[in-house]
Amino acid sequence: MSVDKGVKHAALSPDGKLMAWVGLEVLDPDLVIRVLDTTTWKQLRSLSRHTLPVRCLAFGPDGKTLASGGWDKTIRLWDVGEGREARMLEVPTDPVFAISFSRDGKSLFSGGIEQPRRIRVWDAGTGAQVRLITDGDIHPRISAIALSPNGIRQGAMTCRCDTNNA
Image: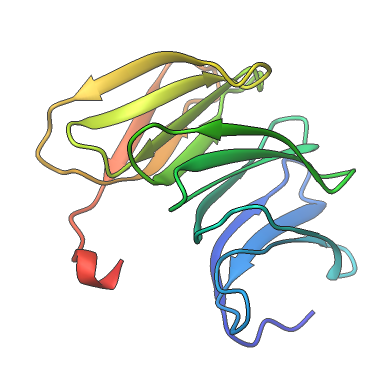
């Protein structure tokens, strides 16, 4: 598969057999998530329900669930095998710039450009927000979330970015 315009965000399944990506396409910029088979590089699925650009992607530990977050203030959970949206979570205030599943896949962590900086913890099965982690740091944008393999620690990375180039 050729990617003429570039890849903006990508995620690899835990077994390495699937890659999901969002590119810089002319007709559907950042709105269509493509799922590829990494052995043949053939496109298996196109997933599109976001109404504004997608900013982050993460596979669940089962490799069957993909989470996407974006400017439309939603997190969408996809059944990759069926190629359908399984659940939509609405973030009440700001776009979603970072997502990560817990090791067991039961929780999903999200962050964005909220001030004060916040990480939301969701029940991946029900879609309910179960926790709000707040940090009054001056940097308003969470651009990455990482969880330790043993599930004991989590971290968030922020960046100070020029919003005119976001």
